[in-house]
Image 1 (cartoon, one colour):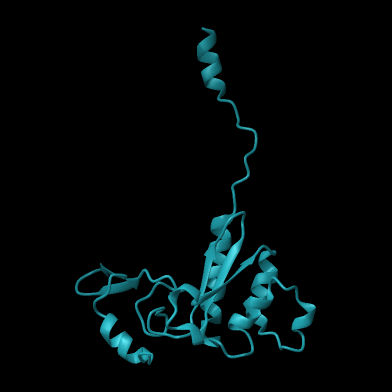
Image 2 (cartoon, helix red, strand yellow):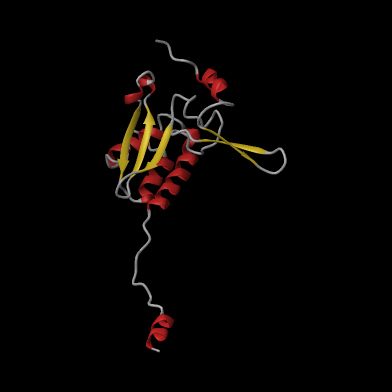
Length: 167
């Protein structure tokens, strides 16, 4: 079975798809967003489309303050069940961001932990999608920020309520 070219898919879904969200601004200005799972910026464009591109990167929140990185396998396009290569990262934020931004060589990859290796493979030196590096860093930052739990300290007692109850 032959795969359909990405440009043809984009021409079909760019104006009408179930993931499309249209927001209307001032006057005739409108913004189109997309709810696709592999769209890092959630913008309706060919560059960021998870449906039209063969190589996509997804960063999502997981369990126990973990971040899940998923990249698509280019040779499994006809098998949706095994399309994504998922890896769970439980490292510090700086380590994850450094792995994305440095684009580490394969020769230096043996000094990096095996948890971060799929991240390096996903956006690294093998030219998977170097144009999505900034988008991946922005999504990683947003996901990491959303996973932080607010510290619960001792709640201050309302002094006025105790004074009213004494009378």
